[in-house]
Image: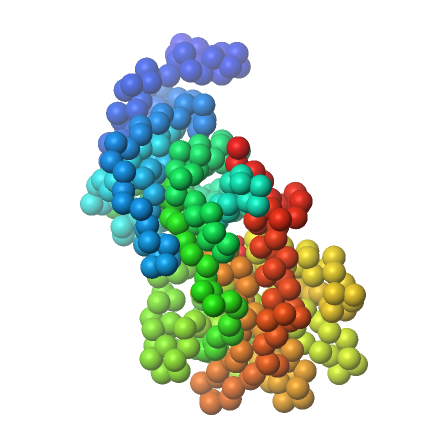
Length: 423
Ligand SMILES: *Cc1c(COP(=O)(O)O)cnc(C)c1O
């Protein structure tokens, strides 16, 4: 009772730290598979140590890896010298976050992530700016989305600005890995998962947060070129009331088999998911998105107006930052830029079928951090129908113009608040 009173008083006075276990023991306990319970028997959880960039410990790598062959870079296959790692234990809070040499992460074999897919991730990039400075694109949006995903999985939470500060330090340390070449970048993979070594399907009591950096080349070595997508009318990526609008690992594992199957049957590199209620006609299914890209349709209406449409964020669509940026840019361009209307609404197979038949399907393209914009030349249905967009125009086409505008911002060739210098 007395300790409880002391704790409450300590909290009121902002003295939490003084009543916590010493830092060293908090740290060693945080790294064990099963952290000790969150209180010391009085029923009152100890105050949790917050995530602070000022606690960051840096251990430099003594080994330098051989220089990368930029021509032979495969996406996400090469990693920089260092990684960021932070561990949280329920009741204790965050141990001091660390930047250390890239190395395997040891996990208890019962870690929940290995059994229940309890992991969330982000995808972002650092760019070599026109002024020689390293630049990020809307990084606060990625940090906010990671926090939202972590909360959906009941992982430990963190202050997004503190995580961003840690990321910047990692970037500065490994800045030598950023290729100073057009179209190249450092792909950034922040991720969090449950390292709780407890088999129960329950709220994680241990969370690991980490960040990896990977130099990547241009998504399109020879400029933008359209791909074909298989329209999947059977498998669902997400559904109303599900978790499709969170960047959590469990949304991705089940998409591999449909993608492999479509590739074998139709030669399409990716799948475009759809959704319909079971009572609806197949043609009334609505397009959703690809496995890791949002989708846009640029359609000429019968009255001649040109509409840019993308499915709405109603719970089954991942809220892409590229998607949002494209919507904002296209809205700012307006009719003068070739878009009379920019809308977030359902786009059905029937609408696209008609637009294709009447020659009004101007463009289809995907969007995401990796590709920025991915033109889609044709949509292949299981019934054999193929809906084709007008011939791709790499100069004046809308997808091409959006790609150039976004890259100009990302590489700092134009001044824009979305582009943030790291140092
Ligand atoms: C990450 C992702 C996107 C693209 O999001 P960006 O923030 O634009 O990179 C789109 N769809 C899914 C399913 C994704 O996982």
